[in-house]
Amino acid sequence: MAVTINDVEYDEKDLEPGVANSIRQVQNANAQIASLQADLLNAQIIAQHHSKFIQDNLPKVEGEAPTEAADVGADE
Figure 1 (cartoon, one colour):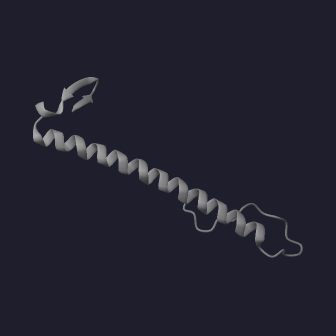
Figure 2 (tube, rainbow, N blue to C red; figure 1 turned 90 degrees about the vertical axis):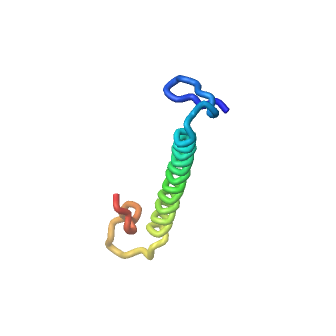
Figure 3 (cartoon, rainbow, N blue to C red; figure 1 turned 180 degrees about the vertical axis):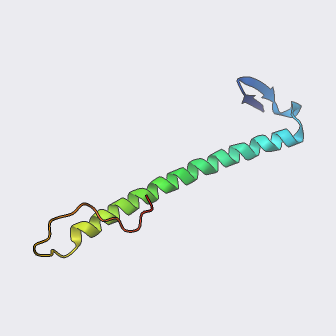
């Protein structure tokens, strides 16, 4: 199997076993990072949705001006 690193193509059978293993580890790590980023984005969307739902469905308080969406524990 061919592997391209820094625009140079290598045949995997010509690589040291440790190098081939490290290539797989980098590929696995990159795939995991992409998955975690997608999970984080989904969690942020869910938190925003539920924060807006909470704010939109709180009981009305007389004399109080409407506020923006609730921040229910976000660290940002």
